[in-house]
Amino acid sequence: MLRRTAADVLAILAVLAVIALVVGQLTGQPVLLGYVTSGSMAPTLEAGDGFVAVPAIISDDIESGDVIVFDAIELQGGGLTTHRVVEITEDGYITRGDNNPFRDQEGEEPVVTDDRVVATALQINGQVVRVPGLGTGIEAVRDSGEKVQAAVAGVLGLEATGPQTLSGVFISIGLLLFLIVFADDIRGRQGRDRTRNRSRFGDQGIDGRWVALGLVFLILVPANAALYAPTGTQQVVLDGDDLSGGTTAGDPVETQLTAENNGLITMLVFLETSHPDAELSRTELPTPSGGSAMATLTVTAPPPGEQTVVTISEHWYFLVVPPAVIAWLHSIHPLVAVGAFNVLVIGSVLTLVGAAFGFGQRRVRPRRRDVSLRLLIKRLLR
Image 1: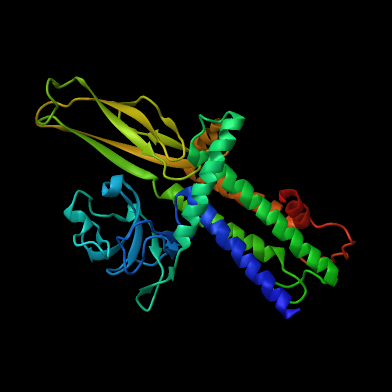
Image 2: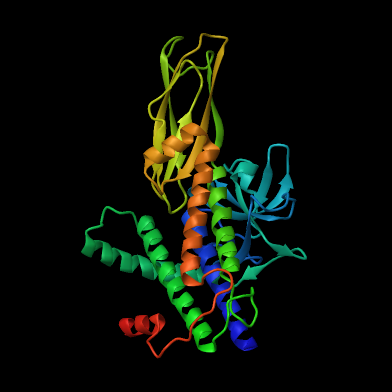
């Protein structure tokens, strides 16, 4: 019985690890596990190595020597980068790859600010907790998956669908099947043993409440980090003494605003400004996964010796319900929209786990000699 329970616990940990990777990919915010694709951090992290990633929203204050995952602006064309903090200044963090001779900021990369840090690599006794080959395996699976996606997209006529969107669909479907098979196997063994589902990890089964709690934590932490990390304000400054050629006081000046989405789920971005002389061409920007959306800000040019400062606020939401619903919730208050998303996630997790495991004390009747779902799937795939 103890051996069987230990196997169940290990299986649950494996499921949680898979979910962590999937959620991290979908939200663009590494959670629990991340990996590097270059040798810039060697020998600490070789190309393809994984590491334990702690989301910035729950990590401790960053210190010199910490390895962080941040949203680079110029390095390798921008995107998530894993480098070490070598100095902390008033403006932010100075970073460098352990295998690089120069600091990132000696090139065109600006100082890393807190709002661009998405995770911190877990270190024990000053050493990064490394998972050898994790990234190599994930990349191999991803490459194979992209070939399958291309073939399936051609058959289904989905050529216009981006590969990242298809990746999110296939990953989500695969994870759902994995969870269904896993839950069916656990319930089957519980039925054969005529046990009761009363304790967390005891010899009487696995309590679905703890499974639900783990899932909610793994999903909501990176998801909320993905919502709050880009949310904030930006300023557009027009100086009457430094206007572009041919522009005079009173002329309209246009500035392009761009929202970039590094995750695998389409986001809905709201832009707002209270400046009386500013006008936005669009206030709602559906931003596809791995893509961007743009809006134009039009402001009247100030006279010489004066400046016009326009503050623009951004609010990001996952586009998982109709935009009109999100817009209505956002109009009440941004926290209401975020809260509604969290309630939706919690409700979905509870429904899934409740259907698979049940909650509380419940007697499981012995299974008859029927064929398990896992065996059916195995036979189908032969």
